[in-house]
Amino acid sequence: MNNKRTKIWIGSAFLFALPLLFYRLPIIEIIGEDTSFFIKEEQFVLGWIHSIEKEEWFEHYERYHEKIILTETRFKTFGAGTPYQGIETTTKDGFITMELQMEHEELNLTISKSVQTTLFFDDRQIPLYDYFDQYESVIIKSSKIPIWTYIRGEFL
Image 1 (cartoon, helix red, strand yellow):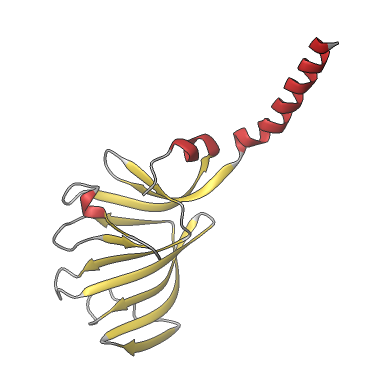
Image 2 (cartoon, rainbow, N blue to C red):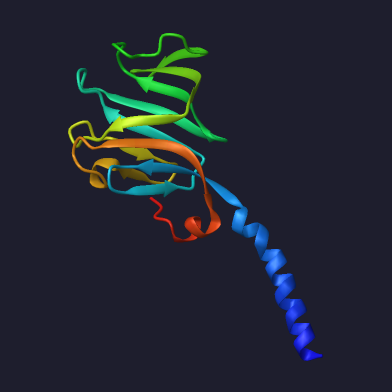
């Protein structure tokens, strides 16, 4: 009788755990040439020093399903590559702020200490130039990963 109960318990546990094998958790993945990291947060700010104007630039992003949405950009001067059509544009404290809704499959960056490529969150900041080599190409994208990868993954 005990053997039958054990088999029922093991079978029930397996049926309960089976969906966990296929369940995938949403994250933001930062992929370098030799390494990658995960971010649990749904929002982040990408900041850097513009290579020409030498001014700070900040872009606010949100993870939404398999996309990364640029929701706001803050900069001090217009130049090549500056968005020209925002939902709303304001100025405050020397910054021009544009509210946007631009969808991206992924972000492609070149990491540099001279421009101080950094990720900002509510409670911390991560200088990407400390994690990746100078001028390394990096991709930031929204992904879904299996729970076992989530548990053992390297998070920033």
